[in-house]
Length: 83
Image (cartoon, rainbow, N blue to C red; front, side, top):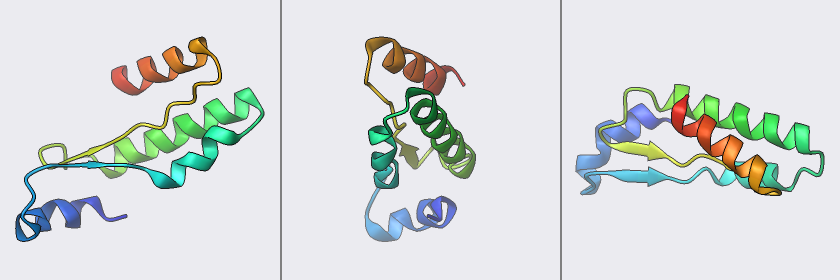
C-alpha cells in the first residue's frame, strides 16, 4: 500500500476522493481470543492512521472494528474516532 503515491495520482485516475477498505484486516475479525482480536484490530488501525497521514484530503482508510459484543465495538469505534 502506497497511499501518498495514490493520493498524488488520483487526478490522473479521475478521482477526487477515495475510501480505502482494508481487506487484509478482515481475518482479524475472526480471531477467537477477544483480547488478541482487539489488540490486532487496534494495531492495524494505528498502522493505517500513520501510513495514511497527510493524505486526508484525498483518501480515507476504513477502520477495522471487531463486533463480537456491543462493548467491544463501542470501545473500538471510540478509539478509532478519537485517537
